[in-house]
Amino acid sequence: MDKALATADGPVGPNARGYFGEYGGMFVPETLMPAIHELTAAFEAARHDPEFKREFDYLLKYYVGRPSPVYFAERLTQHLGGAQVWFKRDELNHTGAHKINNCIGQILLARRMGKKRIIAETGAGQHGVASATVAARFGLTCTVYMGALDVERQAPNVFRMKLLGAEVRPVEAGSRSLKDALNDALRDWAATSDDSYYMVGTAAGPHPYPLLVREFQSVIGTEARAQMLAETGRLPDLLVAAIGGGSNAIGLFHPFLDTDVAMTGVEAAGEGLDKRHAASLTRGRMGILHGSKSYVLQDGDGQIIEAHSISAGLDYPGVGPEHAALKDSGRVKYIPVGDDAAMDAFKLLAKLEGIIPALEPAHALAHVIDIAPKMKKDQIILMNLCGRGDKDVFTVARHLGVTL
Image 1: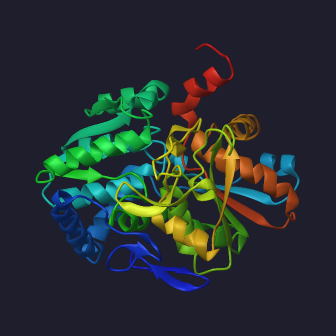
Image 2: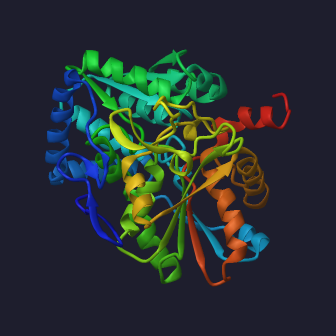
């Protein structure tokens, strides 16, 4: 878990202050700095501890069900008529998404630090479910902050969290979505950090969170690299992953950064780039949000603009700082995909492959559907299918005018 980030221009971070080039840092109140320093020290000790890695790997294998397979989507490939389409199937993990990888690592850190209570935020609910799951597994209490809008549109995951013993606190402030849940979770942590551990769900926030989440999620790309060599005899030509805060994408991309494999992150264009969207890397500019400097959606006065996506997990007005650095370096390309294209991709995958994806990777799939026919038939696209769509059936039904 020690591999440094590298791009075509060489290493870009993070440095000791948590910066990836110009982005990152620790922009938190003084009251939180002791907790940040405590976490940083604990993580640095853990990542060099063979026993920590042994337990992390054991739980990923026997509790999460890793390695997740790579899968050749034969019928989708035939339908598109271009490059081979492969999926890294992280939706087959316990709890149904990539989020559990990071939560396993962080719950081991929390236990190592002697914390008895977990605080988490969630948008689509998958991180909330994963946090509640690992808290139950290790006997810790868990409080999950969730925007009231997301509570409404992700009712199945809210029920799952409660079944797992977590307290779900709806947040009515602001846009009633992920940004506001993060605000309240940070406030809770500032008041209770002596006995609480804040389990950040994405590769964003103050240092060391972007680093530690990347390291725990890099199992995705490490597995995929070995699996594609075993299955096809070579590395893919293109990696594709959805981008909200950016954890599933950085988990896939990071172990390939020292190769010449092309990479594309797909963010949410919502109703359109001139309307409501969540395309921070496309339409945002440098700003500070939730403890770090990155691309942020903001108005001319620096006020945060409310994000929108049909996908609750992409409905965020910022992005992790490592993605910002990768965009500026040119190593990774980032493109926006709207609600309608994601919905069309969602339906197509269900009909052609018998796989119902989450709306988050459906955005990535929409780009695959667009780009694959323009590529040669001997080229390979590997897309991270980072979540399954059980949680989104009510949202999709409403979008299609179907009453369940």
